[in-house]
Length: 247
Image (tube, rainbow, N blue to C red; front, side, top):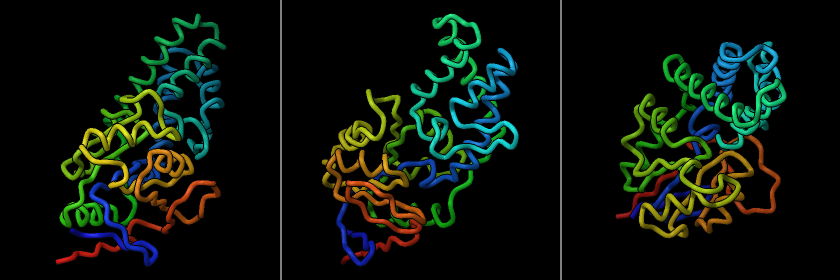
């Protein structure tokens, strides 16, 4: 069986699960596009005031479509994000029941626009490395706070969907990350213990969720070491992971 060498430490997982945004895909680019799409849908179906209220609540800057990388648009599971959208509509005169229904309609409209107009960008080396993992015999999966169907569509656009045995979003479980539910769900569906799994992410929530799930290793990609009480290995990029094939 192949193994992984990370920071001179060797690990022998059977399963490698991945976060998507900020780990495989350039999330700033993606959520800037999504923020614009949702803002325009708010304007079209309600008003500019409601759109601006939503933008303030979720971390979108309509002047240049930049986003707060710690804000709800990039970090919250969709159900939480929709609750904020409903809140912005409630503050603009809608009853709560009407606001919830309209928020869903607005987000669905934005999803349709995003699907037609957004071209996702992988971080350098991701495509090649994922194919190396797959060829080496690791079972690959996705466990994300995103919506399952939207994530699958994203991976289809990137020509990566066939590499993953499972794609699981937070809509399939009760609680998103930092709770461990989605990682536990993915491992269970694959038929493996979490102790057979490496989880790859980029945020403190990824470390916390994967540690709570009891994975073999939490691997975090990025330039900065995250301050957290949970244990993880840190590398700059996925290219720093070495596959060791054993005869």
